[in-house]
Image 1 (cartoon, helix red, strand yellow):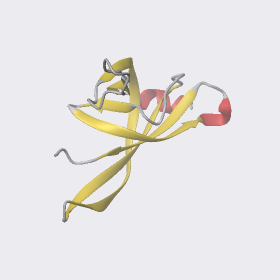
Image 2 (cartoon, rainbow, N blue to C red):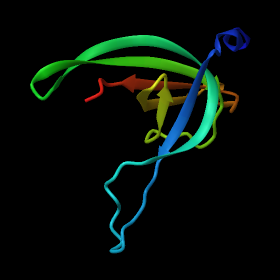
Image 3 (cartoon, one colour):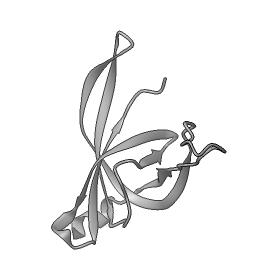
Image 4 (cartoon, rainbow, N blue to C red):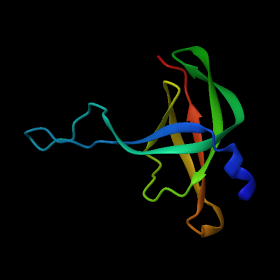
Length: 111
């Protein structure tokens, strides 16, 4: 992974959803996130596809994000980069050595 270090040039913020409860003990439906880490990563576009959103086609881009290992990163988390949000759809601990991660993220068009 030594060749990756020179490609770590994008600064991103990893966020995790908050789960708050109202006075009745119900999970709050308002979606808020808490920052868990700021990392320097390598981002590589891996593909795109189209989905139907309200009867009209929208594009979905997929990216591979390579970073130093971040313990606790989960599929429910998201990445913030250049005023855009990316959903985490896959996490790979490279060689199971807790040194590097490849995170697959998707970007959907903003509503």
